[in-house]
Image 1 (cartoon, helix red, strand yellow):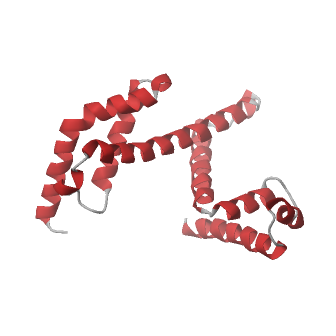
Image 2: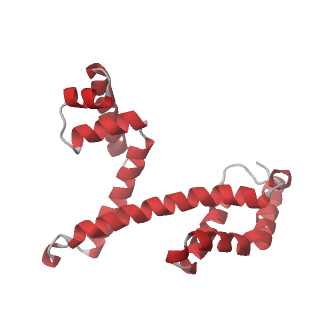
Length: 176
């Protein structure tokens, strides 16, 4: 990509920001009524950061419907935020069940949350049936023949799915 494409793209993003940032904040604030404007402000910024981080430069002709474009990206950002928030809330709820003296340090809690987000992303990347079989085997402790019966699939398919889940986990561990 040459510098003229970058400058055209940057000018496009700047114009998009100037003309639609306030609208986008309002759109997000409406959907996040109970969370307040601060969260909407942060997510609106995340939308524009995502646009800036995009590998393909933003072209003026691609923005015939800028609000539809922003809404599409904002929906993705919003889904991601809700998912992270839900996971963090589940962690906080679980932490409430542990006596305060046994709580991990704030640093450990941060590492735990980061790990939970990585596990969530890893599981989300699996095909739905693979994820379901893998979780049934590992979280629910179900036997493979019971998983096959529950999912109405053949036992070799269950074995393949569970193995696929383990391979994905191992691949994640070796990437670090």
